[in-house]
Image 1: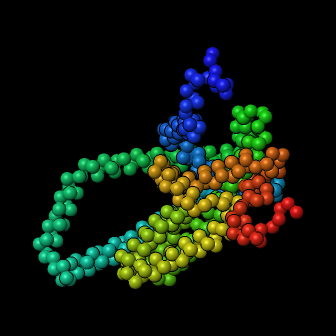
Image 2 (image 1 turned 120 degrees about the vertical axis):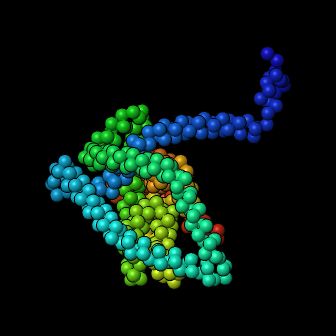
Image 3 (image 1 turned 60 degrees about the vertical axis):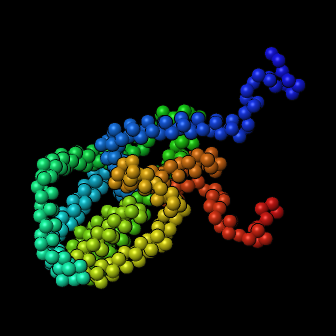
Length: 400
């Protein structure tokens, strides 16, 4: 084999390729492999969505209810009895709230419908007598076109109703799966985790165990804080709607509560519905007041409640939250948007733990998943933002 004076083979084409191109190529094909793997995983998850989504929701509920089970156990209640009490109490509370909301909504719809009719009549009068001067014949033509469109698409509407009926059956089945899975998570979650750890190589099992516990602690912190924020938002907006006399204040407050579990987007959508109802029922002035209330509550949530309750335990950049929700909404719809941020919080805490030198010798038993501060490794310099704000002349000397 011929070699040049510097020991390289002159026939080796690698010497002709710039280093930056070789590095970019090596990184590129690895990224393609990772992207292909993620695509395959996404396709499998999408195919099994009817199972994956209920299990994920059950995991969120288990993170919310597990502290109650531990509290009952601390009072010497057997774990099986504690699990049964928590699940039954939770289902009873949820059923009672939903029943109350549905009954209130059904009772309030006729009044809202009458108000909507009045508003439509006012709009029609403005169109005919206002600056547009639209004739009654033109409005009648538009009304006839709407009726013709509905008649022409009656078959599609009927098929959609049948599809909705089938969807209700699927939803009921998935709800049963959520409850069934929740019981096992609350009763034997530790055993399930130890079983999953059995698939991890022995030499890294402890690190993975610690990282997993950090992730669960982040999930518990996220769900607990989000539930508190949702309750505060719902109560505040409900009181504001009740003071203004907006109809359906209780169902709208319940909608705000549910929407708060999808950060940013959920609050915007639920708030938009409340503003729309206020606009239809009481006019633009009341709608503007409701809009101001919602904006004030969102500001309180963003600048006070979220930092105070979540803190650095599951600290996520707002851009990361927005991108996660957008990706989840694109990939999995409403369920994807609901689960995107909790998944991001778990991955953030788990990856931080795996990369942390402080967790190399941490005993998994010392990580308590019910304590928010356990969601991140205790290492100095984890949050570097304060250091970036220091003037170089004022930065403390770390070497002396």
